[in-house]
Image 1 (cartoon, rainbow, N blue to C red):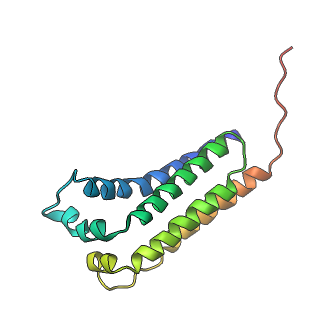
Image 2 (cartoon, rainbow, N blue to C red):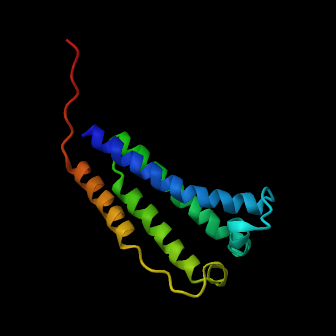
Image 3 (cartoon, helix red, strand yellow):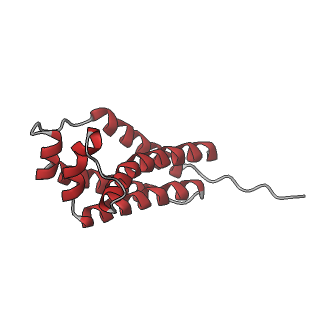
Length: 144
């Protein structure tokens, strides 16, 4: 089952990357590395400016926990609790940010819709992690 563990670890790495790239934009803006004057970056500036540092740190911690879950999968250690913790923190932080004034300034007052396809994929990955962790380990082959 190592192939499934590696495949799941790759899925977790992709999730971490998809969470990490927006975080990099926040950090680059806060560090003064980008100065948006027009386009999509200028639209995001109020959100980048007004998001508290603690939210960015929690976001970064959730990404690290997701990466730890990916490493745990490949190392044949338990990864489900790490995965669930990372996804729960990420989801909670997303909900918190969506209810903030800066988020509404950038994305409007329309209540964000719930992405059922994304939820289904996250639950499926969690179920596969649980399943692969239930499989018995095969004994290592001994050299003659």
